[in-house]
Length: 285
Image (cartoon, rainbow, N blue to C red; front, side, top):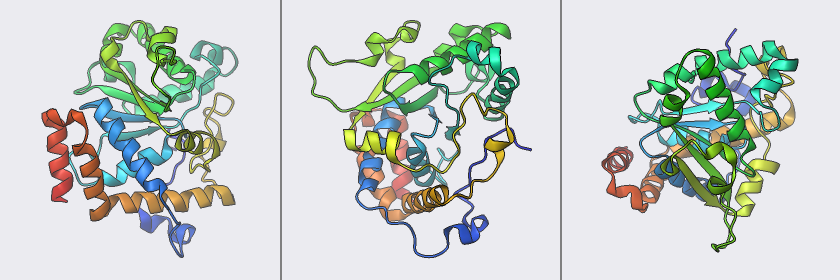
């Protein structure tokens, strides 16, 4: 059995069969909002590996997995399905130690162990919707605590990490709450490793609160249980699957890739050679 929570592989459409038969799901105007958000995430993360944390950024992962297919960035997108907003690794160890060991196996399968991050060729950018920063803080705490136990320098792990927090767009003022200035777990990180992407409240709440998700919830209570490794078949999950497949396939199409390339090209980060190379790949199809 895989150590990863079950999620349908959207790139293997032939394996989905009747689950997505019929007319494709309607995407509507949200594709443009997702495209813009993804372009900003890529630009802010820099020349990094992109790790989408939890279920909230599922659609961003699905879009980029499609848009970046058959490019040199094809293997750069990873979905890390876990939820740990309200519990630290130490707290989970007290009531579900086997579940915590399952999460360590999940990280290793995704090549996200502390030793692998510290020695990685390029930075690892954790991407998620951010409200108070609790999930990011607990994931960082899990990794640095794990590193210390295994004799890996936690500072070396942090040096290869970036945090991309997606927040609700607000009016800019001296009183604006900026997470990278307020939450305590950011203190050991250089400011350059902490990146923000602001989006409309409508998109943020759709992704974070309202959208049906393809993957099952993978919180501390169910870590390592059969539940998270079982394909979901309930109507809401299948509806979410149909939307995800439509989004993924749209992002693979030439017209959408050209729109995504144009979105990236409009970013100030186009001054960097790595982004210019990516835009050129996308435009070449």
